[in-house]
View 1: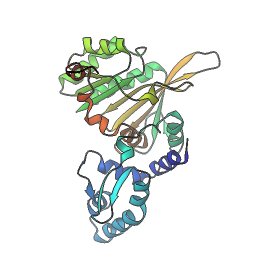
View 2: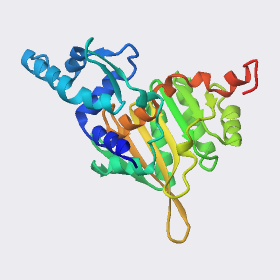
View 3: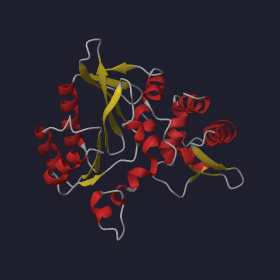
Length: 273
């Protein structure tokens, strides 16, 4: 991990930085410094003024230098930075471990901690419950077809019936066909995220699930000395949870353009893809 990656990890361990990035999420026009300060502080005028000063002199310049935000000092406008949307290659298991080592872990997370699940069945159970809790959007990436489970389909179907938009991505052709046949109303696409597929050593990412952009499951394959492979998962809940913020920064605007990456869209183009 190079010095730029280390700086991003350090910045994301600060809860104020995570709150700033969360406030900017989904606001393509950006926010004024005053608007951001209003979301970080109370209505007390003195506290608001102090927050504005702190943002201007401390937090925003550092986030801007790292590329996580773009800060226009003259106009006092802040927008998402280029690393939030276009340059996610720094996100790997090493970086993830480095970030999560800064936080407490437990069986179930709160907004400031990262939870841990042991074993494939525990991960399945949590993900099924997550599908039941999703209100608007369920985003899935599978690194292979090994984890596809027929018993999970009713939970996905129920979510779709409730009006949840379901997106399923995998580079495995058989897995995409599995989703396409069994969940025809879902958006199916081939992710262009090599970091998830080109890991030579364990641990390796097994799956990534995001619900409503505020709950995240990152599954990891681990291998013991005998070569036996087991799955563990890290879970984050809440919009300012460190794992949730990191994942949103990783995926960036890709979450908003999945329809244009889907198999159905690409097959309809009048040229070879």
